[in-house]
Amino acid sequence: MSLKERLHARQAATGAPVRVGLIGAGQMGTGLISQIERMVGMRITAVADGLPGRAAAAYGEASVPAELVVQLDDDAAKAADAIALGRRVATTRADWLVTIPNLDIIVECTGIPEVGARVCAAAIAAGKHIVNMNVETDATVGYALARRARQAGVVYTLVAGDEPGTVKELYDFADALGFEIVTIGKGKNNPLDQTANPETMGPRAKQQNMSPKMLASFVDGTKTMVEMTSMGNGTGYAPEITGAHGPTCSWKDLAKVFVPQADGGVMNGRGAVDYAVGDVAPGVFIIITTDQPKIITDLKYLRLSGHGNYWALYRPYHLANLETPITVAKAALDQEVTLATTQAPVAETVAYAKRDLQPGEKLDALGGFTMYGVIERAAVAKAGDQLPLGLAVGAVVQQPVRQGQPIRYADVAVDEAQLIVQLRREQDQLVAKG
Image (cartoon, rainbow, N blue to C red; front, side, top):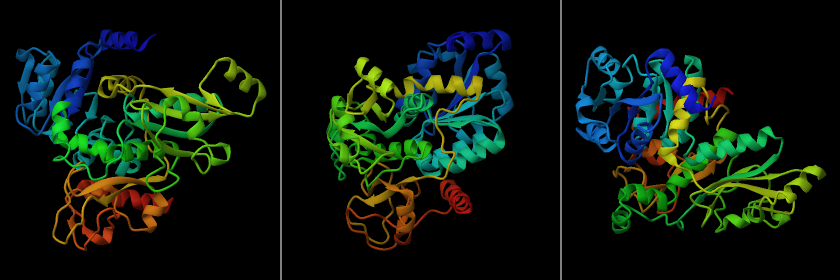
């Protein structure tokens, strides 16, 4: 049966759709509600957002009738009763939402590292599957969260539709067929500007109807770096150099560029994650090779984009939140993981100073004024005492850091009260123990 048919059959058998709880009702979350409303056998039945009224507004924008929405901030049993009657719950409390007993699965969609850590850990502790759209959290503590989920017998996964999950789908396809996967990567649709901040991006963000902070995190490279970190850790593919190569490249030339230098490309060898600036965005790619003569002949006959004995599997789009329901459904129905870090991380996104930093300053949010992210090999980051980006938010500078330099643990006092810091300590211990 198709996925649609299976969702329909499940609802017919149980008398209820897959009931989804959503944390974060911004642009991505609202689009997710809207898409699921068009599907059969699945509904977002509870939404939490810290901004009062925003969850209810998101339902409205997604064409959910206002009379179905009930505002609650406590009493999980009352919320469960409302959901059983076909109502939708709106709340400001993410910690409470995950305790509602008749939610089948939780989706984290805030993009804030600490919030993501708290939501994912709370959902796992409540015995619920968690679909994490918050790659910033995953790049920092995804290994620890995936391990907790396995121990609890629930799913922890990133999503199809976001670049890491979409790359993993291509990777799994080629890996199952026995191809050697040379490079994995994604496109970046704007040149790298590591000084970009909400102020400089303001006019452009207004034109594109975006948050200036979100746009700044794209332009300064932070978003690309954390996405590469999660896709690298989920496959074992680390960057070759600090920040990755990031050449300007057309999608037609992927198999020429993302191959070893000995074969005319920019890579030092095989088995790395990287990115391309240019028309590859908003797509993702993997480079494959084989030494089997008949397969080589057939690949050429099939006119797959290639160069020499390298070929590119390129998907020119990712639908982000609009594609996320596929992961949600597969996790709920089959406990299927799209992407998670199940081995010791090989990549890290570390914090760099966006401007000169002085003692007493507090580091602000991703896409802000004080820092940006750079992908690094995990071993190099550890040896250099470099601060993971997800731990940097809210840290207080103790030692001066020059613009363009990595921020070290020794340079700041991290907020030890944050759960993401505690999870990272847990993760580091797990890695140290093997």
